[in-house]
Amino acid sequence: MRVFKFGGASVKNAAAVKNVAKVLRVTGYSNLLVVVSAMGKTTNALEKIVDSYLAQDPKQKELIQNLKEYHFEIIMSLFDAKQHPVYQKTENLFNDLETTLVRNKSKQYDYIYDQVVSYGELISTVIISEYLNATGLNNEWLDAREMIKTNNSYRDAQVDWTRTQQIILDNVNKNILSVTQGFIASDQNNFTTTLGREGSDYTAGIFAYCLGANSVSIWKDVPGVLNGDPRVFENTKLLSHVSYEEAIELAFYGASVIHPKTIQPLQRKEIPLYVKSFLYPETEGTTVKKGQPLDPYMPCYIVKKNQVLVSLSSLDFSFIVEENISDIFKLFHKYHIKVDLIQNSAISFSVCLDDKFDHFEKLLKTLKAKFKVTYNTGVSLFTIRHFTDNSIVSLEKNKEILLKQITRETYQMVAKD
Ligand code: ADP
Ligand code: ASP
Ligand code: MG
Image (tube, rainbow, N blue to C red; front, side, top):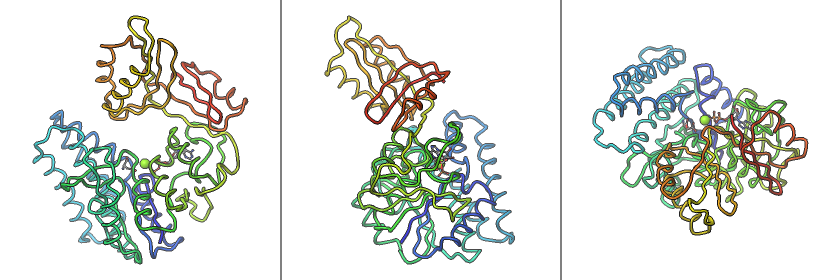
């Protein structure tokens, strides 16, 4: 069997949803599990709803109304019959969302976030599953929260692989077409959890691993994995084959076309990953599998925007030794801040950080008690895998460079935006 994943861009409007059905007809749709994300920018819109709820901002109602109108517009273009059950099902989900907010008693941001933001995927999959059924692509809708069990680290939940595998094997029929949500799961108490922003690719990896799938295809608005994000770099080229190791490195450094957690479960069972264009489903795209790092071999450019560069030095000119460094890392872990790059000298220690959960202010306060701290927010981290002299020269042109580091295969540079 195969696993497909369609992301936000591939279901952003009615024409895109129709195109998903077209892709399924082109590629075949038996023995297939389809994982779908929220439509378009719905997750961002739901994040704003969480913020307005917590700020008790009366705009919350209007934000929910806008999101509802966006989805109903899509439904109206997809379904002729006004009495089609999809209308009531979607209405019910929006009512549930509002009830969740009214009934909530928790003040814990991450928990509330997961209870609310998960509606994006629930709504999109109900619409898509109903549309596919209405157009002859009979399928079963699965609730991913019942399939994927995690701990209760809301917004960054960790999968309980043993339980998840058991439930998936017991409940997913490999012989039919199934439709489920990316990104969402549930904890031991059945509260909804999420796997981290852009985590639907990872969901596809989890199902594929548990089911022992033959392949995973993630359908994108690009021809496959390119040697740079085409929104940022010019003249990007398609990589036709990438090894699991290389794909993990590219995703880790910030090549956002694949979520970094997706590769590991696939690599463990040697399940190939195809990254393909949903606009041109017949074209080859990129295959991630065991083998040569890159084919064709060329420098790959990655940029991670909105990072924080922090330099710490001791207040009394004493060395920054292993003990301080280990305490600093404990703080990064405590505040859920990811370290992209490290550089240290006798009395100073610099790190480039990815503050995905907005905890930097709290970290800063703690660090300032012990160190002299200088920092730049909003900087970009550029990486070139398999760099050449020319690739470095062209990347550095017109940039205000704050830090640079070169290892055997990887060039990295932090620059002001
Ligand atoms: P999804 O619709 O599944 O959420 P994303 O928007 O997360 O898809 O990923 C596709 C986008 O990733 C592309 O539009 C492109 O701008 C970006 N991207 C970043 N790095 C690369 C790369 N190396 N190759 C191709 N696309 C890339
Ligand atoms: N909808 C979620 C997000 O936008 C998950 C995903 O799209 O992968 O982050
Ligand atoms: Mg996405």
